[in-house]
Image (cartoon, rainbow, N blue to C red; front, side):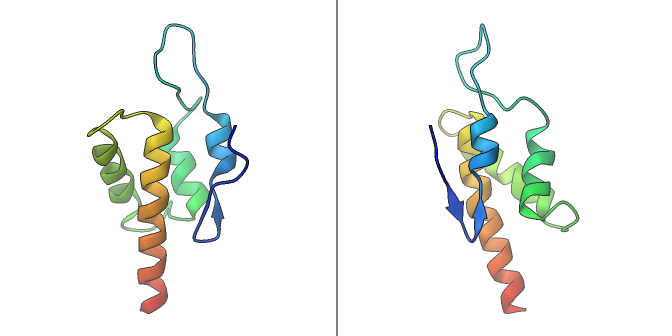
Amino acid sequence: MINNFIVDDIDWSPILQSIRYKSGQTLPTYPGDLKAALLNHSGLANHPKGSEAYQIAVEIARTSSCCDPEIVYWFSRLAALISSQQEKE
């Protein structure tokens, strides 16, 4: 189990700990709207690049397993990039 997964001062472990295997599925999934959860958790729900960052994370994840934990991983990196860009402006 993941105890903590912190990127750019955001602890992603609450989302990762919600991801579970469901009967009949080969990959673990988030039990709700993963996009909304990630955007809200990162504070990017109203950011003009928030949805685009989520879509890019999904597309990157498609190159391998395309499972929800991998989407969280890539989104966390993109969210950190967006946050660091905002700080520079």
